[in-house]
View 1 (cartoon, rainbow, N blue to C red):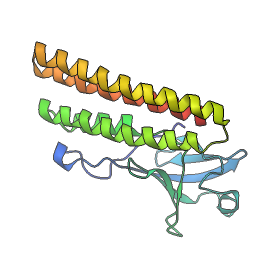
View 2 (view 1 turned 90 degrees about the horizontal axis):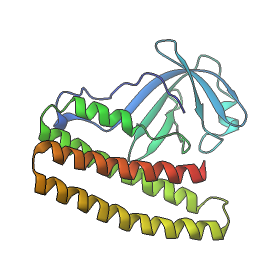
View 3 (view 1 turned 180 degrees about the vertical axis):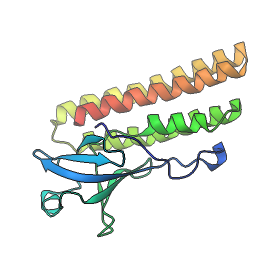
View 4 (view 1 turned 90 degrees about the vertical axis):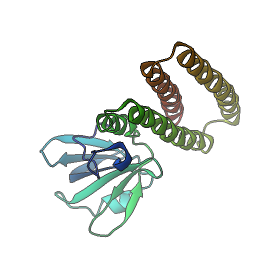
Length: 206
C-alpha cells in the first residue's frame, strides 16, 4: 500500500507529547476487484489501498459514492482502520502495511535529545512487537496447511531466541564501548530486527 502525505494527530513538539497514531483524510474515487480502493488525498495525489474484502466488505463499498470523504487511521493498538465519518463505522484493514516507519521518524524529529531519541527506538520496538504478534496470529488463522504452519511456528520460536541473544549482544557492545551514539545504534538495531521479522510474517499471509 502506498498512502500519500500523512498528518500527525498531535503536534510533535516534545517526545513526552508524541502520539503513536496517524490519521489521514482521503476522498474515495473508485474500487475494483479483488478489493482495492483508489483514494485521493487533500493535495490531490492519488493512491491505492488494498483491503481484500477483509473487514471492509463489498456490500459496504458498493454504497459509497465517488467523492465520499473517508479517514485512514493507524495506531499500533488497533492496526490500520478506515473510518467512515458519515456513519461513524470503522473497518479494520489487516492488509495495510503498518505506518510505524513514518511514526518513528516523526518521534525522532520531535526528540533532539539523545535520551528522547532512545525512548523513540524503545517504543518503536515495542509497537513493532505488537505488529509482529498480530501478523503471527493472522498467519496461524490463514488457510496455509498445518504442516506449513508448524514450520512457521518452529521458525518463530527460534527467531525469538535469536532476537533476545542478538539484542543482548548489541547492548553489551554498546555498554562496553560507551557513548550515547552506541546506545542509539543498539536501539535502532532492535527496531530493525523486529521490523524485518514482522514484514516476513506478513509476507506469508499476504
